[in-house]
Amino acid sequence: MAAQPQDQPQLQPKDIVKPDDQSTWETAWQKGVTPWDAGDAQPSLKEAVKSSGLDLPSSGRALVPGCGSGYDLIYIAQATGLSCLGLEIAETAIKKASQLIDEAKAKNSNIFASISNQDFFTFNPSESERFDLVYDHTFFCAIPPPTRKTWGTQMAALVKPGGHLIVIVYPIFSPYTPEGPPYYIRPEHYEELLAPNFEKILDKVPEVSSPSHVDKERLVVWKRRV
Image 1 (spheres, helix red, strand yellow):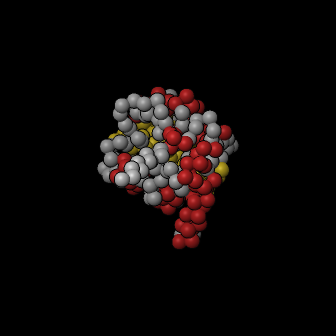
Image 2 (cartoon, rainbow, N blue to C red):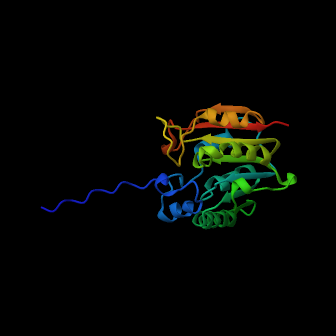
């Protein structure tokens, strides 16, 4: 009897994405190796916006770095009324997000959302264009740990005084591994980067998580010091 072929192990982002080659993010999207692409906005984001009791901004500008297909981006624009900009470097993701934004706008002309092919770390808007709200979900965990300090510096530069940074700390897993993405993260990894310029105003396990996020996430909201 002929030997049965062995099932091939499923590719993971860490098998494709190289920290020194940003073009490999596009390769991951082309191959469909996008486990972060949930098909909808995260329940933890909806909780932060709708039921956290926080006085989040209802006018101004919002930013979503590494926005992918744009589900969270569109949700923020719809739920808050903010003009929402997504940053993305993978062309396949940009095309998908652009299509979803167009579809959302066709249903609601009051949605202000857009996407830009732009590297978060070189993004340099004028001081008058700083953001009232920034949202990070699966962006921090995607960047190599040596670049995290620059992430913290950039967040302080992009969020205007009194503005908010919503962070979904995900994926929280054990044991430690140096491999990624996603890279090993803990809530305290954000603390050391943000505490000098931000005040933490919410830190909790979300009431509802998407199936992939159960017992692996925390919802943390920071306010930029004035």
